[in-house]
Image (cartoon, rainbow, N blue to C red; front, side):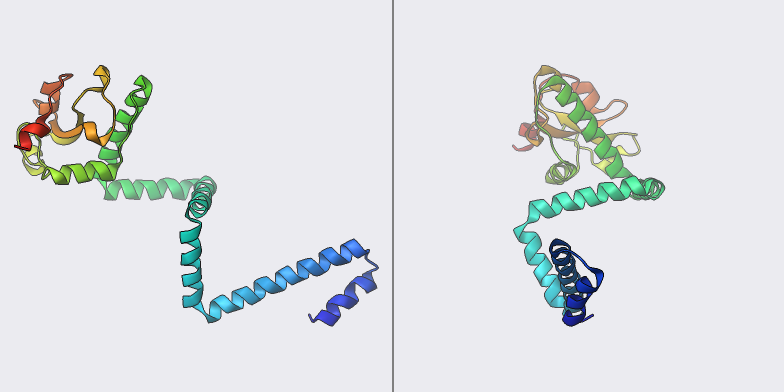
Length: 197
């Protein structure tokens, strides 16, 4: 439709000045979107670069939009969402266990009002820093598996004694039957100092 056709339509329909203005404005918006779509198809690399720059400049707004879009998708596709989570959990069982432990400790700290929190990445980095070994007995994760123990985040100053839940108050200890974490109980023992000698 050309500009001439657009000018003729409101007169033929007998629209008021306001209705004509709204109709022509809407028509311009539609045309601009069509033109922008054509430009994106013709210049995909430039469009991608423009989007990247926009995201860098408006990162928080874009992240919020992404979160809302993700929540909406999970709400509208409940069965697919559950299946997707099950597949992820089957693929990364260690991360699921670690996340569960971290969430449990976060809830306990929040309940007590101790404050602080740490992420899964911080916990994994801490384990790597200490070579994936229990700081008390010195056994690695592979050596702990036959003993039915695993490395868990242990609070140097326990939550029950006012310790916070930040990564600065965490040390990797083994947990399970006869594990160092079980033996330590609610004592304030810092095995990190012994390993730094």
